[in-house]
Image 1 (cartoon, protein in one colour):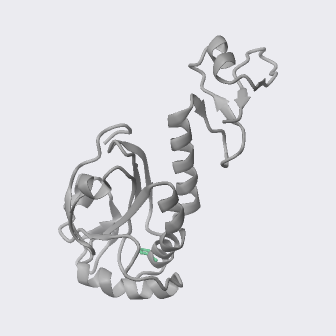
Image 2 (spheres, protein in one colour):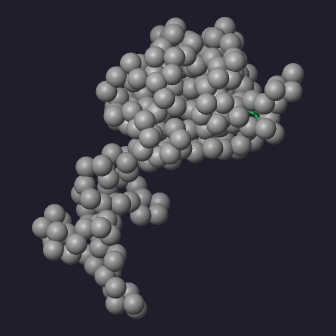
Length: 217
Ligand code: BEZ
């Protein structure tokens, strides 16, 4: 699958029952992330972090959903640990966890890690992340190995950058954080840039090319 492709409208068994992915998303964005297995240390820190950050996802109209190859029964038992680890005292659990026991989705979305196997020697899911926008298009894809936990603050940062650059003809520079200056996209002519962004700073460079045009939106 490529960036911009429609994300598959799969049917899955989850901790909130069977879902059809597009219907479950509704008009929200989605963050779909896989992990190798329930009751494992790094995965526990990751899913608990998403519990803690859940209000930040809601603020942005983004629904998180997790996946591993364990059963719904196992997910539900693990959720009790996750709630304690995340110091979560609310009802239920804030987001669903998919059970992909047959690895159908893991294969379809290329999420298997050949280096990580279950007790029967069958590959487990790696740490994949997909961001899906409200039009069901895939906007970001990441694949981390089982031994390296992800940074979910970075996922929120990417969501902010994607939503901002959908709204304005700008791009976000290295290590950008919300509120900081952004770059006017190279495809915007100088005339259009002056109209769209009356306050703009052009960085002087030895080449004399005026391609770093900064603004605030
Ligand atoms: C973990 O979540 O801690 C983990 C899972 C599989 C392999 C390595 C680490």
